[in-house]
Image 1 (tube, rainbow, N blue to C red):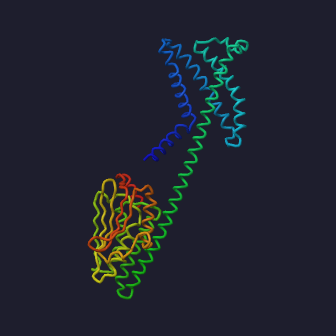
Image 2 (cartoon, rainbow, N blue to C red):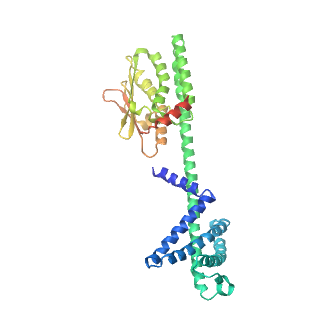
Image 3 (cartoon, helix red, strand yellow):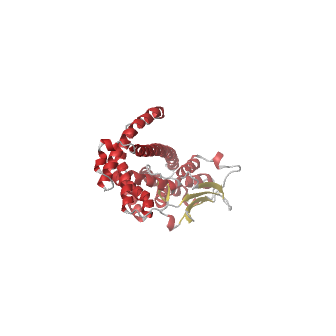
Length: 382
């Protein structure tokens, strides 16, 4: 959440400062507020409009000079090795900018009725009393320069942070795509192997299995560029694979789907249920003469969605662990979920069931797009 807010702040700031009109409005607002702030003591002492005019003249004069300081600063090198040259350039430029400010401020005082136009004459302008004013405003010039350097460092920090975020995002996407590419040929090979075992036994059933395989491949291609999809769409993808397995095992394989309506549009990783169901059938059900049942369930649990794939098959072998004994389907699915939710928002566990068999238990953050987003995705899918 904090990252997204931080990104929104950067976006808002970039929009405001992206045009000269926006920058001018922000600068005018800043110098006006600064004038009002410094005039408060004078107003408290009863000086009224005179205090306001003095502070407006002082702040707005610097407001007119500051763009030139900014333009000069932008032309200087910013690398650390050239810091001495940069500082020396600002030293000489600050003398010129301070002198220019004094002329602008003297003219502003005359325009606001708190000074005389005659003060712009050279003999009066460089009077002895002007030295103190020069030194004070020379210091003010350096305050502006220091603020610019702080902002430049902040810009560089934001730039490097954005580059790092883009690199991390690209790396994550590349890793997820790599994992997804491992799954595609994996399930395709297993599906073809299942079909080939039925070719001579029952050609009609084989044709039906090939039709379901075609549907399975079409849906795989449709989701190949999407790392996450609604659960309802993931269940549609699972359908053709289940049909292939039902044809293969007949009445020996029973499938139960228990999906609560409130989570059917929750966002889940694409193509993550098929390898889990395949694992349950292949290692839990297929080796039993009596077959068995695979249950796929999903429910809301607080701010998470819990997804389970259970079977009542032969169970896990002795000494089995997820870290050392899992096959490609389980390991890749676990890695994908971990990469999609790297902040500990998800969990993936495989354990024996109490009444025999095994179960995969997954917790994901519950994210349900609103109706308009779902309709947009449906149109894109169509």
